[in-house]
Length: 304
Image 1 (cartoon, helix red, strand yellow):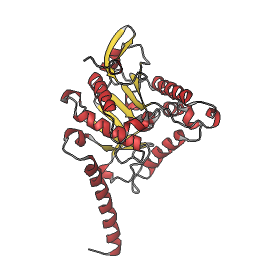
Image 2 (cartoon, one colour):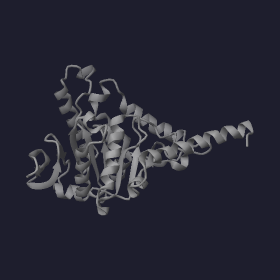
Image 3 (spheres, helix red, strand yellow):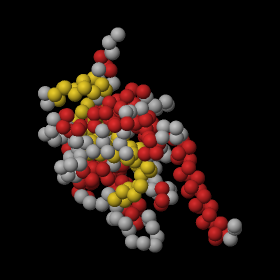
Image 4 (cartoon, helix red, strand yellow):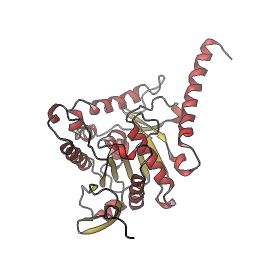
């Protein structure tokens, strides 16, 4: 029997047929530049995969910055959820759920244009539908996009994040990579900060990413999501504040390694070894942090 139409979502863009079987009829692909879709996918080297519109800009600015104005490096983005259910406050208090859905999608495309992304995909999932357990449809969409792009670096949520949808996307990314052919799996996968800082990791366990530079671009990227900021969540200020705090409080005995720093967790071992349990992997980080705290106290209390 032929696949249902919803599972044969094809995109005809700029006269080219892109064979990507995305599951949601509302899923979209946006290409800010003049490249054909084939070219845009083929030259994507850095890929950010976030749960919501604006997560990419908060957690993956390092990748955006690495690719900015580079001919050989290009950043692509994937936003997994649809933006529905977002409370509209302040100037957006009058907006219906469907209007907020459209506004958030436009804001994500605006950010993609500002950041010179190769593409941004919006997969249009309801947040609840991809949690408990992780959605097979989402995982299969990600596998399709990974096959099409084959990036060198992926930025996604970290598995210790305190937002359930963020954790669901992180797990979906890991599972999609584990089920992908070896050639589609990048050597580097980072789990980044959004709803929980990774300052608690031991310094040796942190992936330290300088996000200093092009401050106007960072502000514009974060500010593109006005429906979130003007509705009462100052994500733009909070994100930059975290970067500044990470840099200043990283080492009490040395100069700052950069003026702004973002931390990440290395998820590459989870992808390279499918036998590693995700919960156990995170627990090891927690145990190392707990052991460090205990040893520091014991030294002061003169315990052996």
